[in-house]
Amino acid sequence: MSERPTFDAVAVGTTLPTQVYAITRADLIRYAGASGDFNTIHWSDRIARDVGLPGVIAHGMFTMATAVRLVTAWVDDPGAVVQYGVRFTKPVPVDDVEGAQIEVSGVVAAKDDDARTVRVDLTATTRGDDGSSVAVLGRARAVVRLP
Image (cartoon, rainbow, N blue to C red; front, side, top):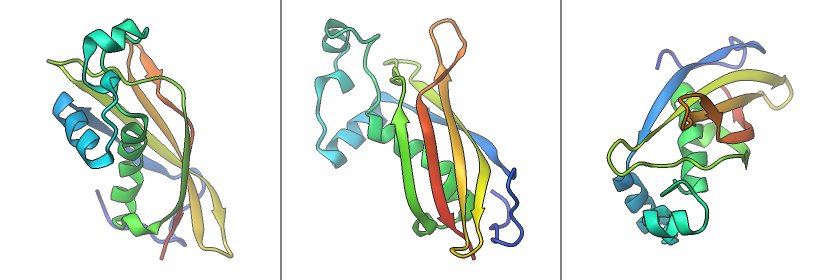
């Protein structure tokens, strides 16, 4: 990304450069090992379909972590994120050959002069079966302290 933002230089309405993050089944395996979440819906198409899913899906927390990468790259400091929350709206199906992609965009929605923080509202989408864009997170908001 470009130059690290400062509080005084950032205005409400500032947009972060949109990023697309590829997800593979190997990423899900690594995440399962790191998190201890070995739920079969994250690695078995048969089990995922048996419970009504389109196939293997990404872990919700993995999706959440992927989305906030947009913010941590923008500020060039993961420690600058002082608050982060999302609502999970749709799962991210991860094909065994093609994988998946999450497109993440963000906009500075609020500034707190006293705390020298900004709130970045994120939009995270993946491609639906019909090729349309499907929101996978709702109310995704990160509060970031800027120098």
